[in-house]
Image (cartoon, rainbow, N blue to C red; front, side, top):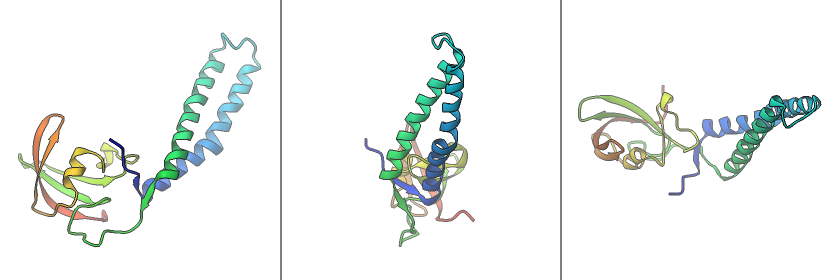
Length: 159
């Protein structure tokens, strides 16, 4: 399944800042370290040189990925006209069938983070929530099996 190119303004800023930091600060630092390690002699047995070359390859891979994603991403800057339904960027308070409460925000695939309650718009739960409203019952097929959620609240700013 192709992932969505949607991203919040905060997520887009974060990716752009990460790209700028890698390109302008971290990459030059690593290349200087490679040059210094190479000057120490035999590169085939130079652990510092080998480590820094690997680090540079991984960094370049991340830079290429970020350059591609920042060109493709569609920043969602406006709130949906109908804020009574779940759309991209919404915060949703859910209750499961056991009465457990959880809050999630639907964000782009580059932004999801379980520590901050962000879930990817491409996840099964987010797809099931789209266009639903308060008091709707949402059956979701999760890796651990079917689960039913009830929407308690929908909002678009966490204040």
